Amino acid sequence: MRKSLRWLLSLVLLIGTLGISGASAGAATAAKPESTDIKDRILAIAGMSFIEEKPDGYRYFVLNYTQPVDHRHPSKGTFKQRITLLHKATDRPTVFYTSGYSVSTNPTRSEPTKIVDGNQVSMEYRFFTPSRPEPADWSKLDIWQAASDQHRVFKALKKVYGKNWLATGGSKGGMTATYFRRFYPHDMDGTVAYVAPNDVDNREDSAYDRFFSKVSTQECRTALDAVQREALVRRGEMTDRYRKWADENHTTFKTVGSLDKAYESVVLDLVWAFWQYSSEKDCADVPKPTASTDALYAFVDKISGFSFYTDQGLEPYTPYYYQAGTELGAPTVEYPHLKGLLRYPGYFTPRAYVPRDIPMKWKNGAMRDVDRWVRHRSEQMLFVYGQNDPWGAEPFRLGKGSDDSYVFTAPGANHGAKIDGLTADQKAKATAEVLEWAGVAPAAVERGGAAPKPLAKSDAKLDRQSNVRDLRP
Image 1 (tube, rainbow, N blue to C red):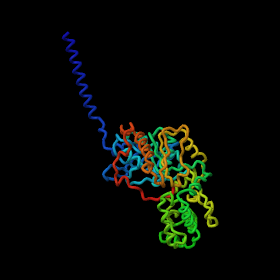
Image 2: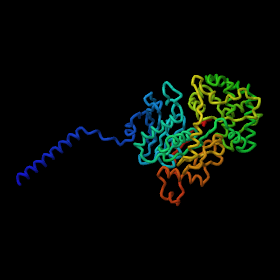
Image 3: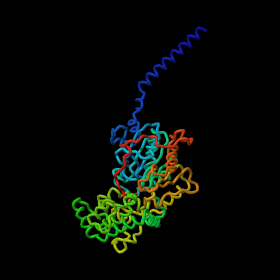
Image 4: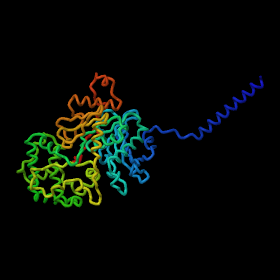
């Protein structure tokens, strides 16, 4: 018996010794503890690289993420896609913002981000510089490839930001958020798409003509048409000024073909541009047809912008016009009041604004497919439009099969329409839905006992509005 106990004690001591030595050896070879700093956690993600952090009272990072040029064939080359990250906390929801164009590297906060008091990831759309593969195979610029970019960014960052995610964007960014949801319907917990055009049939654009025949007052519409017509009547005087400006600023017109074609494009933009970014109160500023040529020139430049249709102005938007001419579609408007004054009828199309060495081929059915999905299969989606915004003439609509989704229109609003500009009941409903989708609705709001409102306090720096006036969607 004593012998057995001695044997058992020896065995216990041996096991203890091995355990201690094993632990010591393990400790000696253990991996370095994982960093809790958000920058380190983000940069630990495969394919993520650091550009800069902008210290401004909050954590804000500019990053690159390596993406396949072709998501169907990932082995056939990669490119670096620029993204930004406004960090709040990993236990807060995250808003995935897209403009559909280049990404700003200055920190700003979208309306849904403010509502849910969350993090914000912003992604540059593929082929907008510097997020462009080299060499650029333009056939790989389409809505599915772009949605797949967004899907990969989401999967990579979801490991760090594990709470609910919402997608949002305005204009082409709203279109982008919608296409992302169509192709990857289970990634996001909700989508808020602002002023997103929905050109289902690119051959049928009468909705835009109806819009321009009814917007605002007859007096304002007549005044704008008269100025647009007068700008073409005085084409010679106006183009003399335009040419002088172009020479002084060393601008060229190779893509559109001539300064005269650029001038006609600028003038055709005038009425559309006015309603996109102005309001009814600005009708008082429309000059009379008898105004001086200098006054007329200044007004056209203020509203349309003579710089845009130069090579230098168009170049950053080549990816947009490529997509408009291959998948998205573009509005065609009738101008009966300009009869006899247009030198290039039928020219005002996306193909005219893309360099000729980039091939373009129209793909039928892309927008119809998205429209059908939104009408009959969308869930937790909110579309916000402006009553006086021409881009809303062909909106997304809901149908049988869509669930917990909404289309609201802000009275009198233009292309900058927001939830905050909706009628009181729609504003409350939209805010409550966004909070619920993000998983942060206060209990009192869920019970209907309190009015829903943004959870984040206003911040003059983060909530500043862009001064860019972009006539594209």
